[in-house]
Length: 334
Image 1 (cartoon, one colour):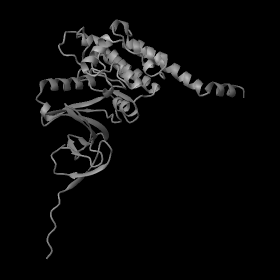
Image 2 (cartoon, helix red, strand yellow; image 1 turned 30 degrees about the vertical axis):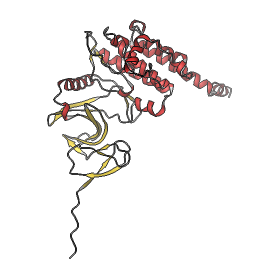
Image 3 (cartoon, helix red, strand yellow; image 1 turned 90 degrees about the vertical axis):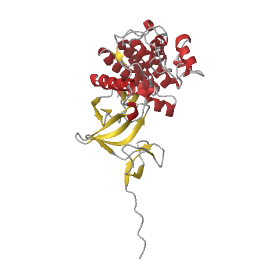
Image 4 (cartoon, helix red, strand yellow; image 1 turned 90 degrees about the horizontal axis):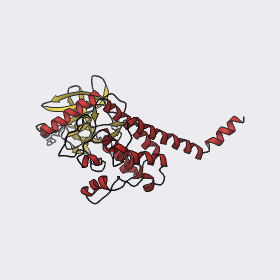
């Protein structure tokens, strides 16, 4: 009699959220326990259901939580589920930030702000269900391309400035504008995310902690002089600067020196760093990043108009360089 074959552990097919490779992984793994993709090393999970949402792929993971590409089985649409890490659920400050993100996002209705669909808890752990934007971030595009197309950067600037204007009309400041918080959906539309640091625009009390990312933080925040919408405008200007030049506005060996640069060092105009940038675009960013908030654009509308004018002039110049005016003259002579 032949020996019986050893029992095999059941496997399930799972898709990598990074490279989309198919992986066979043990179905007995604890729920949402990741394993490394056999092709690229990105975390892969056995699909797991929370309420009507089937969590299928890991999009990204950070200190507070993990974002999963998921499917709403009831409405039959793809969504993103952001699940707080279990060990973070007991941290009151983390919970407050998570609730703030949910409420701020739910209060805003703008094409370029990520839509929040619902907020709930699973086994005591809060989670957010939101619009899916898994086509990379502005940060990843900078990393891959170094310098982005001026036309694309102006498009992002116009749309994100409009999103921030909508937030301001709802009395909200974002407070952490950076390339990593601008995601793209499947159609390539930029989406502003992460309102976890948002607060009322009317609050201007002293804070011992400077909130934001050092490479894009406004000088008045560093100096503890308070903040208003001009601080978000400065950070958006810094984000556009990085996208156009491949360099953050102030580069230094230490974070302390970077922060000091925002306060004391004159900003090198973008078109000095990258001569391909047109003058109107460079000028608009210089105004948005003025050291003194009073010298920045007075409203987001003014900033948007400056970026739109720069974009229009860039399109006209591109059209001329491609000989479009000659083609138009030839057409009229027919």
